[in-house]
Image 1 (tube, rainbow, N blue to C red):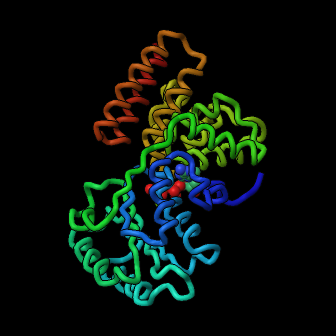
Image 2: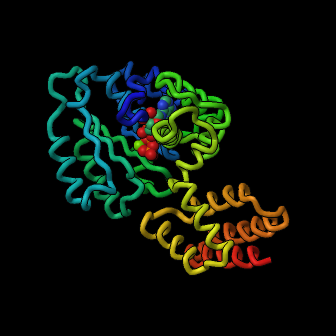
Length: 320
Ligand SMILES: Nc1ncnc2c1ncn2[C@@H]1O[C@H](COP(=O)(O)OP(=O)(O)OP(=O)(O)O)[C@@H](O)[C@H]1O
Ligand SMILES: [Mg+2]
């Protein structure tokens, strides 16, 4: 098993290696063939090949030294539109020297997080440097991109990979890294990541690193919760024994000190409750209470209060 991020290690280098997204890839390949490019707008959910596609296009277009012709900015990392404008200006001022392609590519990730005023400024910058620079704006939602930018770009909508393709991708990495990934583990990875290949790959890597032997569904869920099942188990038994205050203290540790998401904790609580050696009747009562809390959390209720009521319920059930 190698170190380093597998999602990076296995990032396709050429448009030819991209899974799925066939229509998009063939349109992009035509740009490479013509050695010309409009401004681009890539939209779609996380981890399905947006950044990968523009990097692959650049490599196919410019060859191995492509990195000198492409600049990646992340809109949410840069402090304000002035910083962006300066960086763009410095990069775009000059044509792509020593390349047969007369323009460079500026990638603006998370463009949809820019305010509309910043986007208007960006649009003017795009116009000024259009001769020497093509822009590739990337975002999750096209609704958040102002119309004048959309109309200046060719829009590419990326969709999540199919289940078969996503699973095939993960299985392939597992094989290459010598990870014993069993079917239940692969199902759990897909269920948690749907078509997001970055998340899927990271899950596999994290589970493989903590698990000596095979990666199964339990390994995946414990990575997902990022919480040792032991701690949740301990919190639950404290609750059942009526040690409410102590159980609540433990909960605070998980939520605040370890920064876990309430949804992850509740998922773990559920799977641990099902494994507890308590009567069926108590399990039913608890899973009912868990469902209730889970629902309230999705409605935006305060996590700590909701989870505390669950611990109180535990104490009641334990008392029966
Ligand atoms: N279509 C794909 N084919 C092959 N690998 C992919 C594909 N999509 C994503 N990957 C893998 O997932 C990783 C993340 O993909 P990428 O950076 O392209 O996501 P993205 O769509 O830009 O997501 P985000 O919106 O989070 O930036 C890549 O490093 C690569 O390993
Ligand atoms: Mg990206």
